[in-house]
Length: 297
Image (cartoon, rainbow, N blue to C red):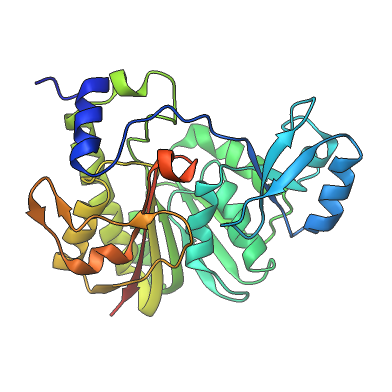
């Protein structure tokens, strides 16, 4: 059997209790509360004929129900009053729940949507250390931070593993990991992805998880997330973390998504993994997503 293509992934998702379904994702914006309130933004855009509807499972997200122009080219967007950010992609920062004054590590920061969201949740107070490995992605990250008025983030080019040598301990760490993506993330995804590629991504994620846990203070919180539906990058990685790193799981308290899988292709996993959250597009009308919340022992 070829490890890729629609038939392969369709059968795979059925085995996992999911479904490969064509879903049309609504465009979503997130209000940047560093610069404007939701009430003020809705009024400004409403005067231009834009109709927004609150995303009930996010704090600052709104679905775009009607707009006669691109919301990525408005004055309000250029001023940083909002970001275009898919609704599921807003959830990892909400689960992490950073507080003003804390020291936060953003492991894989580009293009900056979650970094700007971290700063807004922190009310611009405290420090966000943001890492980005790929140099060509740095200009976009820096542009978004400037556009959104983020003044409490320090950006570093390189691998987040180098942080360990700094002898810092972080209150919270966001690891929105590089992953295989999901079938809604790009055209032709089903034909481009293979099991070998998924397993390579999972290996990179384990290395990043090890680095992230090593710089987290005792009692500190790590949120691990992917936009992948593949258990190798999700539940199986979390099982590896529980087996090898000094952490415990906490419940991801969201009103959307399913408990993560505790049995994968006949393999029984820790029952605690059900505390994580898995978002199937056909159930949530979002991108596929996985979110885990870990606490350092």
